[in-house]
Length: 460
Image 1 (cartoon, rainbow, N blue to C red):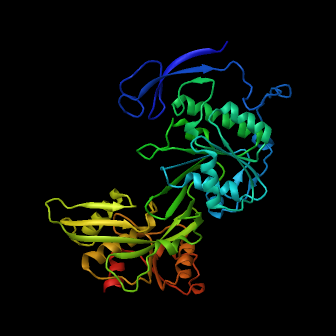
Image 2: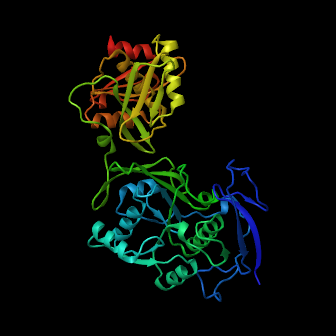
Image 3: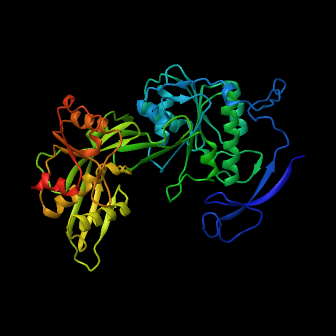
């Protein structure tokens, strides 16, 4: 008979304790421990296999690195180019992929759209939140004529799900969502820490031993973190975050963790009435269409993974009506903004200590690339002096504490992107000049070394 034990789990971070605690020592949250009865299985046979006669124990032996044979991962290329880019080139066989995001952001729409558009692929879409009729209505709205063999299963028991998987033998499994599943081996409610961990472990064993990719849709907490224990993100191969504002049409799919590719890739979608549309050129949607030059607005060239993107950086500098000036930024690190303001005041002589400063990255995107520093300080001075900068000028350089213009990576890709979108001039660091063939670009490349030099060229 299986051994039953009781433990206390923090519902915020998944910390396990043998007794109840008022404050979680891991996440410092109060009154989050709940007692859960866990049952340890006596059999090591995977739940998704009923025939155990063919299972042979495998003994792993140590091998030299030189003797290990490596084969390229088999990837399934989907019709969704943005998803392929974020995953690192396609869906890897046997991978476990977790997608998190706010309610109503479009996670289920993205997965159902993928399940319906894969040509001649058998997909099992498991839903624990919606009925077959609800999914049918959404599927007809997204893809009236599906290309794949998409099967819908409304079930929350993992044992019943694995029975249907054994009969159907799908090529891809989508679970919506992992917080709704429950295993008979754990005596706790669905969505609890132990249930989420056990159900994920069962699906991981199925994915690795059957070489079938599995997509898990996960809820998030009020802090924006994926709900459940932190070990959930460690167990899966890839963690994707679906971001955006439900009141805007654009959505961003970002890779937080990826064992089979870069974790810095980004995919952009547009939410429409018939589903999500891929945005192949994000620079065009992140730049506003303006005919006249406005003060406090500049364009910077940044990189998201291997993709160059031109973004619009906006700044507003005004007199502070209160004793303490306000500092606010949207889409950019506030501490780095304060550092740039200190550089402008100390090295360039601009008196901004009594001014309110507001920064915004247009389009709702968040940027951590320091290459937009030069564009930001140019926008701040443009707003401070109320002198517009031409919308045909672009910036791509980092600013140091001494006011020097530092070099950035992949500068030629940034220059090519600016040239493609019709910009006439781009400011870069003079330390990026080496190796650049100025003759092959029609755009005017302006290398600079100091912030003061930039202001002289822009404002005279």
